[in-house]
Length: 102
Image: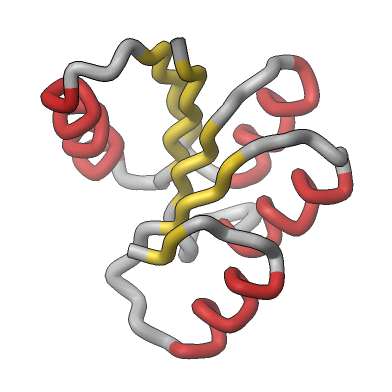
């Protein structure tokens, strides 16, 4: 079973991603966080396999979150989803080893 953390400041987005994941039929345990700061605190205290994160959020954005999690040296897969199409975010994501930028 995969442990997935969904991070987005908009509840409707988190709910939509949970719904889509539920339709895959893949067994997973899904946890949510509303911003990068809360997500980092959760990751510091729990194991996850996949981090799905938005880029633009209050307190700590998705890129900064991934930078902090990479320092923890965990084997986590990272996927960024965003309505933001700025190339700089994608470039930073690739540098951090993000699996996909949606």
